[in-house]
Amino acid sequence: MPVVVMLVGGVSASTQLFVHLWQTVLPSYLENTLLLAFWVVLLALVFGVFSAAIITQTNIVFKQQLRWLLLLPLAMPAYLVAYLYTDLFDYAGPVQRALRGWFDWQSPNDYWFFDIRTLPGAALMLALVLFPYIYMLTRGAFEQQDQNLIRASRLLGLTAKQSFFKVALPLARPAIAVSASLVLMETLADFATVQYFSVNTLTTAIYDTWLGYGDLGAANALASILMLLVLFVVLAEQRSRAGLRHQSARPNSKRELIQLSFSQQLIASIFCWALVILGFLLPITLLIIMAVQYSDFAQLSALLSTGINSLKVSVFAATIAVVIALSLGLYQRLHNDKYRQVPQLISGFGYAVPGTVLAMAMLSTLGPLDHWINDAAEFIGFGAPGLILSGSLFAIVFALVVRFSAIANGTITSGIKQIPRSLDYAPATLGVNLRGSLTKVHLPILTPAILVAWLLVFVEAMKELPAVLLLRPFNFETLSSQIYQLISDEVLEQGALGAILIVLFGLLPIVLLNKSKEKV
Image (cartoon, rainbow, N blue to C red; front, side, top):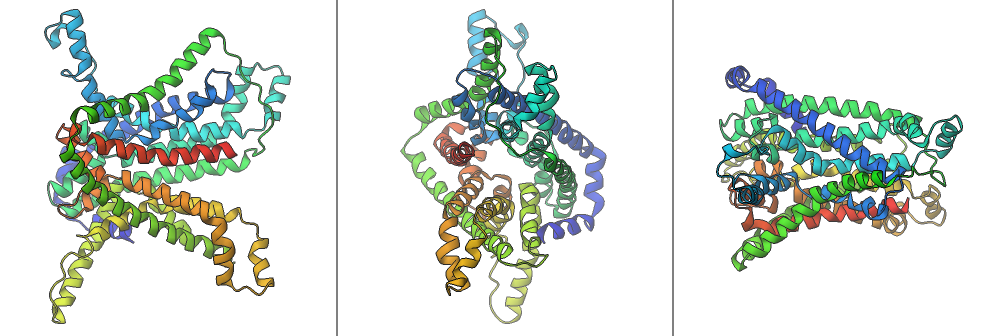
């Protein structure tokens, strides 16, 4: 409903500011958004597909270690990586200072050095932390391929490399397309990285129009344009997912690996280790150095306060999302009507909505509701309660539940599908009613899936930034919003401990994902 209200608000908004934006900056915002999306997806495809191919198709050394190390960049928020690399490679950073010292360069005119605060720089930062989506799904697709097809191609005279490019890679295309669409949606939803690099995109335009100009209608109109782009991506993703039905799902026993020569081993190892180092090890090392050098007791006190706020919001969002997902999953399991999947499908759509768009939808819906409640309270003789919906934690938690319900739905539905149908009917034959069946049979079996779903939503809620920035009450900071403020003020050193905490929480789902994949 909030998204519908936002779309209606965007259509019926005053057009004066929107026309002004269209005549001045909006075309460049659109161009930047499309260019950024193109470069991020292209780089993430190169990083993700090649690393997945190397791990699954070759005899690269340290394969088992690289297999899970390549997932670690997913734990790093892109805006943190952007700040750390800017700090490292700027004119005043240690790299350029060292170069000037070694070669006796006196000014920027004496040498050339790349500028990281550009659109290609932002694309590289996003690709470094988003490529694991493509790596993870593509690796799974390669591992699930029917090896009989690969052997048949070899019997027809193809070499191992030709077989990979002509059989294995085309078979993995649907998984690559799905993962690329995930990267594309995350790119369209990103706010902090492009804001820090001063790359004006639609998400920054929404934020500036709402907070800079105070025009909710024009912001709604911009959010509607971004929503249409996301809708296009979702439809493309569903179209590519349809191709998965034609894939073989029979994992086979023995895989014939491509034997790499020494030079090929060296190149493949440098490529994979460079992704691990640049995407995770180097940024986390820089954060640890900052924390050791600049942290003090006063910062620990502030960190405790914002950490409690983050925990409060994330716990509420994760608990509510899991309860809703569990209710919808069991409803779908226990009812046979043809509309039983509709509520779950609708609740899963929120993940495709960028946090900035969702925040605008919440403001457009909850703001008028607050005014209506205040007017009604005054009409019946009570005092106006204030902004009890849009000005409280309710708005943030509501937005986080809408955004991340799809994660809880997917995890719990997967767990429910693993329960044999016979266990639905066996308790009834023993005289146990539906409530007893749910509490004594289904819920105990589903406990691991419920815990995983709760943790995944909890971690995503901890990392969420755009929705929290726009919806937080006055004087309320979470770890992500505080880190963003410190980055904006170029003093991340003061919040290095909080940044490390966010990364550590981000590692939890990666460990879970890796363990679940190892069991397959």
